[in-house]
Image (cartoon, rainbow, N blue to C red; front, side):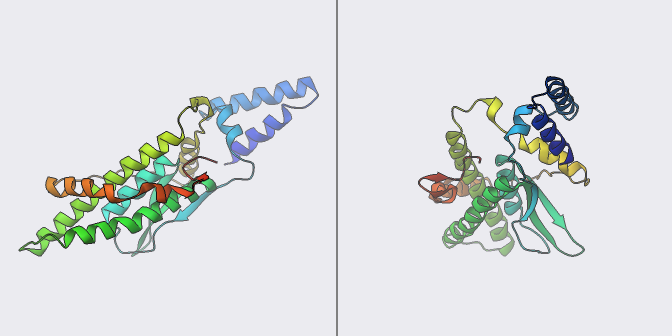
Length: 230
């Protein structure tokens, strides 16, 4: 964002040995922060040269399943990103938009969970029998939603644990900056609406989500937890 680059340049000038120049630069930086509802701590915490990126996390398809949209949108917010359903003439694809380090982590965790959820669903559906195919499809969709909600709850718990003890002043308000960036293109985040048809399927899916070892998906190694913002 141009405003971030401008504020960073002013902050650099605020370290000038010339007291008048330094004071003027700092005042201008604070005015810009106030105008755009930012904090100096947020701007300082963004590494120089790190840009907001659009990262595809799914291939182009005619229609994206709702469980994938729920998973992607929820993880995006967790990692200070925004999830977009990028539509073409006949195809659509999911994207996460955020600073490169945030979107990389989000895409990594999404890819891991996206591979696990269908496996759990296939195993469970082998134990179910339906006289009508449409009932089977409805049950399967609600079951997958339940699994997604379960793994998201575990992911949030892990995320919050790794951020314990951090003061709110040190947490980067990157999501706000990403939304400001998207406004320039007229793009917005979206909300999903669900109609619960099979409570039993939803609860069964939530219970089955315990099988997912979330630690394997949120740690690149024991010494390098990717849930920690960099």
